[in-house]
Image 1 (cartoon, helix red, strand yellow):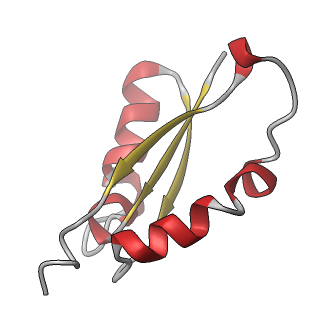
Image 2 (cartoon, helix red, strand yellow):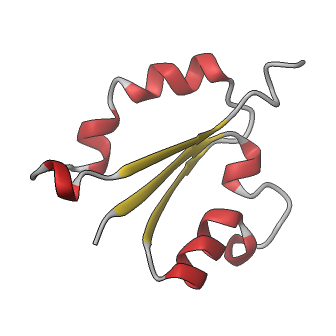
Length: 81
């Protein structure tokens, strides 16, 4: 089964909502997928780009293309400010 990695800001992290109600957790619960929430409150797209450089070692990916994790990026709201 593929893994979904969610990279983002507070919207991904789930700021001001119970941990169980953050959208990555809900996706996991409703689809049965393994979901890793890498949202950080206050992060910008520049910060997310910097984190992408270390993402392969962070998620521990080893294997074939068929098992490669899917990366979903939700960012930009903090860049407005």
